[in-house]
Structure formats: structure tokens, C-alpha cells
Image (cartoon, rainbow, N blue to C red):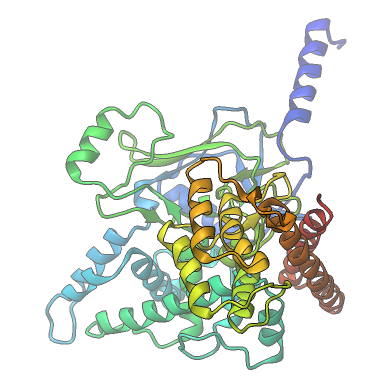
Length: 495
């Protein structure tokens, strides 16, 4: 039968809308038994139907694919309250368990949300198929080989990173300093959570925490896959907020004690900075809802946003890096610390005209700390000016270091500059007393060093990646060092 003009117009409009949809790569539907079991189990637990299915994609690997066209304003997924795993539910379950003396175990109230959720994942994984949540547990990643903490946490409980083997030692050496510092802090928190959980749950018969690697895996499941319900509120506040809830974008905790939760299926959605979604818990339907403001065509990957983070944060927290990340910056905290240390050891990186004492340098640094301006020194490839914090540090330190000004006069001029007053840095006949020119010279010198270092790192990473092409972590390191190199080159040549 010949189609009419109206049909052809509708078909052209549908084709145009598909081209405007987010994403361009079609996925290959997953045939994994774990996904089939999870989908059937969620349906039996009352989860509403959704236009999503697990699939594999060339760049993001496992993710969620649209099974039908999804229009802006549609719900991506709704997770019933009974399928949201929260700390309050876990604490209630632990309190109901008898201990060795046959009485309830009140110490479980001392578990933090992350500790409670990590222990729940650990204990359910120990039960294997006997667990009522076995379908969900089997859908979780079997390991986190692209997360630096998982690789460096070692085989035994410790508050320090383990770099004994060749692989972990190589990775620790090739991580950017900001990422390595974050991983060091994560290791301390991980070990603290392990120790506290073992102590608080010592009276519970089974299962005890005995397997360090299993606990590391469970701890990272929570860190990489939990959703945020919002800040805990009092019951009165929650009731008031529920009355005025007309938009699912408002986050509402399920309990006044809960701010995070684990949610089956929802945690399979990958991140994209272009995704626009509204999330929230609806008190009327008792469901956690994700609503999209983007259009997706059938076969395309559906995304949510984890937040406006740079690749250093993404790699440390989630184990991936994004090419052309619009939030990528160049951090100079390590370079600033090295410069200060060189000054204090009387071996500055730039030519100083007057020797400074370590106390004088510490005094200038303390001024910055008192004003909350020490640390977080950054450069952006999109911003023509350095960050305010970096300029504040350089404008205070460079006149003293390079021009021999007294700390008192430099701090007075800097204070006037900070308040937005006309600080006459040009009163001296020495042209190099201009902080703008000195700051630009310092930045170019530091960026030249970063370019050289990132060239070496990038070469090492590419050699390692060619030898182990399946290692996703090496690919992420390559993305990060490439971005670092490009940003440093941009600032080293900027005048």
C-alpha cells in the first residue's frame, strides 16, 4: 500500500529526532545469564518496566541501552523502596541477629553508612546462592582492576599502599600526584572501616570479616555504585518537604538516617557529562526516580551524570577517565610544594636575589593559610587566567623571592591587592618587581617541567598498554597524561 504525505512527514520527523538523540554508538545487547536473572528478580520484586537493557559498547564497555525511543521528560527507571539497600535497613537487620550470648547486638548502631553497606555486600557475597539478593550480587563487577585503590590495597589489611609487586609499583609510579594522594587517603579510610567494623560486629556469629580482598571489593562496590538520597533531615523537616514535593528533582532521604543507598539496575548506568537528569525519591509512590531531559534513540547508550569532575577524581573514585573532559584542569599543588621546599633548602628553582630563611617562607605560607588560600592551585585550558588561589600565592611569594622585597612590604601590598585596592607594585625602578610578569614566568617554567615529565610518562604508558592492550587502567593513564601534556604546553607558550 502506498503511504501518504502525512506518513512521510512523520517518518522524516522521527528520523530527525533520532539524529538529535544523545550518543551515536549502538550497543550489542547482553546475553549474560546474570542480567536475565537480575531482570526477572527485579520484576518479581515490583520494579516497574523500563526502556533499558544491558548492552556492550565499543568505548564504555558494559552499559544500559535504550530498547525504545526515549523522549525528554520520560522516566529512565523507577526503583521501589524495598529494593533500595540503606544503612538503616542493615542496622535493623543486624540488631535482630542474636550474638553468642543470645541477646541482640546493639554495637551495630555505630556503623557508618559506608561501613554498613560494605559489610552487607561482603556478607551477602559470602552467602552466594543462599542470599535472597543473589541476583543483584551476581550483577556486580567481579573486580575493580581499573580502580587504583583495588590494585594498590594489597593482599593483607594495612593502612598503607602495597607496592611490592611489579605491577602495583609501576602503577603507583605513573599515577599523577593528586591521584596518588587521594588513593593514599582512601587506603587509610578503608583500613579504618575494616578495623572498626570487625570490632563493632565481633559479637555476631557469622559472617565475620576475615577476607581482606573480598572486603576491599565490597567497599569499592559502595564507593563506585551508591546513589545519593540527599542530606539527612529530621522527621519534621522531611514531612514538611514531602508536602511541598511537586518535582522529582528534589532529593529526599528515605529515612532521616539515610543519605546513600544501593539500587539494582540503576547502578548499571554509565556517566556522561552531557547527560541531563532529575533524580529524587518520591514519597507518594515510595520510589527512587531518574528522569531524563535528553533524547535517546533505540539502540543508543543511556547515561546519567556523576557530577562535574575532572579525570583525576574520576580515575581515583570510579576507575575511568574521559577523553576531552570539559572539567579537566592542571593541578600545581605538588609543584608548589616542591618549589617551597627548594626555597627553604636555599636552592630555589628561580634565581633569587636575596637568601630567605625558612621561617620567613613559612610566615608567608601561613598568611595564605589564614586566608584559606593555600592549596588547590590550578590552571584551566579554557581560562585565560590562572586560578585566583594560584595568583594569590605567587603575588605574595614572588616579590620576596625574586626581588628581595621584605616580607612586611610584600604582605602589605598583597593585602591591598586581595581587597581589590590599587596595589602599586610598580613603584620600584626594577621592572621585574611586577608580579604579573613574574607569575607568568614562574608558570611557564613550571609547565615546561610538566611537559617533559608528562612526555616520559606518556611514553611509558603507551609501551605498557601495547604489551597489555586489555588493561583499561593503562588506557585511562594515557588519557590523563595526554591531557596534562596538552594543558601544560598551552600554558608554557602562553604570553
